[in-house]
Image (cartoon, rainbow, N blue to C red; front, side, top):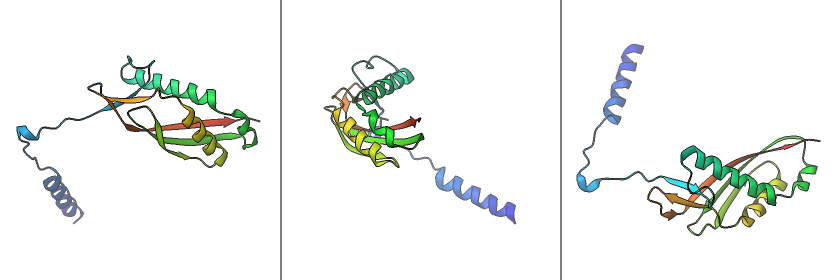
Length: 143
């Protein structure tokens, strides 16, 4: 009985999701990829570009962050997720920060607002577009 039900389930999914739809020539589509770049990381490719951009962001955040505020935090690891939108002019907006520590949230929001308009998204054709970016951070506090 289990084998029969398994066979029926497999056949149902293969017929319902395995259908091929003809795409006419006028309905062609293009997969559009976008990449985050900075002035220094514009000529890099793939993983090197991602590492370069991440390094640039880390430097900007480290430079502007007020580290004195971390003295009142518990020692250990503090996980933070930054999410924001970068428009075609390089302006950061729609900032969303998740952390258990309100001090870190307010400070990182301030820091993100001070980042110069160096960041921008480009598509594979080289055109500047707007996009969303997510940046996970870990802050270690030692006492």
